[in-house]
Length: 458
Ligand SMILES: Cc1cc2nc3c(=O)[nH]c(=O)nc-3n(C[C@H](O)[C@H](O)[C@H](O)COP(=O)(O)OP(=O)(O)OC[C@H]3O[C@@H](n4cnc5c(N)ncnc54)[C@H](O)[C@@H]3O)c2cc1C
Image 1 (cartoon, rainbow, N blue to C red):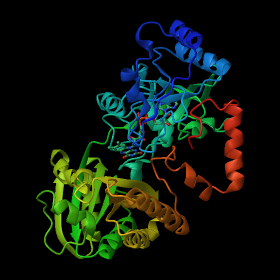
Image 2: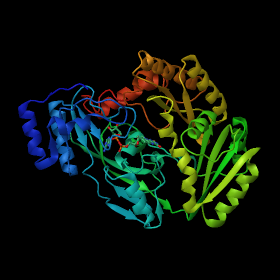
Image 3: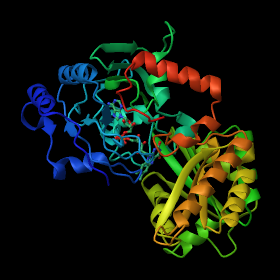
Image 4: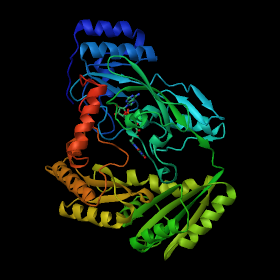
């Protein structure tokens, strides 16, 4: 961990005037936690500001623009790519005090939400009114709407319902210098001017501080069911995925667990699959009662050469999803550290990708777990290693480099949901191409001419 104090006394005094009481944090032991996120790096911020109103955010950004002080926006710090680490110093702006849902409208199917609302709280508030906010990252109980918007978070339901971007109708954001802009509108359709809302979604806090969002809601699905299907071969599982789509079914979630994952889970807890299982699918359907029954019978007809099938309805579904959740804790049986990525490949190339990833792992003599959202080609890849052994961290880094080459060669993307942050920044030039990158840099300059907002991320 590195530490620095880059603010003059007079600057701290001005911040104190904008943020009386507990809005300004300067004590090292209190601000340390704001220097880290789930990406595994920590740099002490110069100070932490915790505005409690949009006016305070505007004043901070006006001050930062004048003083040319870097500002790093932050919510719960669950991003895994070091997207809110103040690696070159600056003040961290925590959005967590802006956390009261402003409105939920069951006739308009919209919610107006500030950035610090926990995603699960919004989901529960919507359900209580028979409404549904679908984006569902696995971190849903701790992450926020502001973080989700800035990382364009996805999740298991993305196959049927899409990702965060698909639910953002409009935004209010404060730019460096303090100006407040409004993008989009509180309506479900809108084609006026360039789509600044979409531009800001996934921008990792580099374009503006989002202070509120208009979100789209859906009617609440009445019920759901989950099916676990075990196969002897991975090809049978992937052929089944094709057959499910061919049968006209779009499941709400479809997860693929190849053989290494099943082996790792079997050594961790008692598992239901029979000996000889080489792959499994977890498939969920939701909607109306008769609709779910109809989809589940079509899915059962599409299953190819299964060794074991288990169907769970509604409250009972958790016992199947528990296997999926255990992958993370079980993975540490293979090594105390992991180099994780969330690559995406065209759906038809998943088997090629899984075999290629295994070849990369063999090449670097590292165990690997690859699994994920098979319906949208989004594969989570964990190279396991021990950073206590000399050279292992570098080895894992080389494996990630080769993984990205493999995925780009298959026509894929280096990130399906986690983003770039600092941890993938050095790979960035390999994907969008020089002309697109130049445009991105120029757009950033228009929003943030002095490069004070989350500098060097993306
Ligand atoms: C166990 C675990 C499971 C996860 N599962 C998933 C998953 O299934 N799908 C998925 O997509 N991700 C997943 N993630 C990653 C992470 O939860 C998401 O990226 C999430 O959206 C981050 O939200 P946060 O509130 O923690 O934001 P933070 O991590 O604090 O911030 C994320 C980014 O948003 C910016 N930011 C935050 N608030 C604002 C604001 N108001 N204005 C401007 N910029 C802002 C920050 O600068 C940063 O760039 C997971 C992470 C963990 C640890």
